[in-house]
Amino acid sequence: MSYHIVNARIVNEGQVIEGDVAIDDDRIVGIGVAPPPAATVIDANGSFLIPGMIDDQVHFREPGFEHKATIATESRAAIAGGITSYMEMPNCNPLTVTQQELNNKRDRAAKSSWSNYAFYLGATNDNLEDIKSVDPHLTCGVKIFMGASTGNMLVDNEQTLEGIFASTPLLVATHCEDTPMILAAEQAATEKWGEDIPFSEHPNIRSEAACYKSSSMAVGLARKHGTKLHVLHLTTAREMSLFEAGPLQNKRITAEACVHHLFFSADDYADKGADIKCNPAVKTPADRARLLQAVVEDRIDVIATDHAPHTIEEKSRPYAGAPAGLPLVQHALLTLFDRVADGTFEVTKVVEKTAHAPATLFCVQERGFIREGYIADLVLVAPNDQDEEPPILSKCGWSPFAGHRFSHKISHTWLNGDLRYADGALIDGPMGRPLTFDR
Image (cartoon, rainbow, N blue to C red; front, side, top):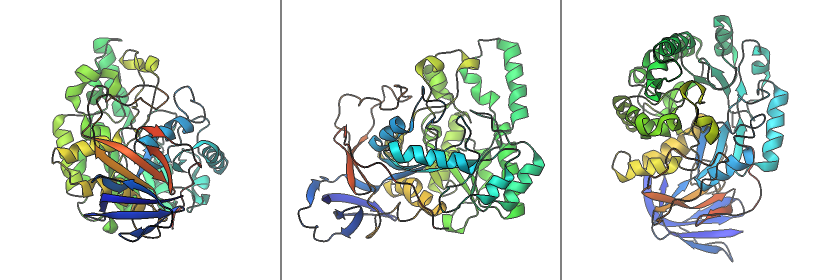
């Protein structure tokens, strides 16, 4: 079909302009030009028209943990949240640590993913040859868990780390926490509280020091070997000293923040408890403030979700048994538009960090911008006029944002030129496509 989106505030490449956008088949065919013949007109009524979010970090749990989530359920939630493309992590079962498992995931996504998709190859202590041989045109990056999290993928062999940083043809994305420090803090907390460790201890167990020790090691290795390094879900003010402010195009070492670390702080553990238990931990209000500042000054390059759902029953356990992770794709953009509404971010900054920057950093072909000839992954963001919260579409059925009224809503989402979400309803259509990378 063809569409003509009129009366929009088009947010793109540092500007907000009022105008119209024409879509024909899967492409943006015009900005401020006559529409294609017989185009369906969508009146934006002054809403923001933005490129769809490219989420560079999600856990959709398939294969192996389908009781928590599936590619189908979570990609539907992503479309409702304005996320048109995602890059999914390897800590499922079996682990995505071989070319065969990468192929298997792509086959699954081709049949069931509502969003466009790509997958990381996971690093282990013994799969360096797999990493060297991966196809850089189809794989978004190599994921290294330098701190243990969900899944058994800790890479703690120094020789292996040197080999990966020295030889991978891809971007290296790291989860940085020091596991020995965390284990020692967990033991001390258990000795003090037994099984009744308060959730407010999570940022002390998953501490600033544990984060900094690991992230500084990763940055040191990248500088030594000239590696293209992307450090995921940073949480502390101290870590910001490791990264440079300025344009993404000039960097080999880049930084990511996640929406929940920009929204919540340690003050929220009293009310939210396990609902905001994640790794790395949500930390102090001062840490959150520094992260927000780092986004504004371009020290943080990308904003993502680290969407990682668990069941309500799993999250209802005491601290030690409650898994870490939050469902976030349906509400991620909305949390950032709250920051636009309160004056923390310019709307152009939100689009830069969620669409332009991941497209540029990962060399995604023909997505992430509103440009003639680019694929039409587009989202309309409107003022929120809803009195009731929309249903949760993630399979887990809960959200850490329960009870919060967002300032904006996602009103429409186009994927590859097809309207897939409108006015609170998902619309059937073709499945998402594999992302391709111009490397």
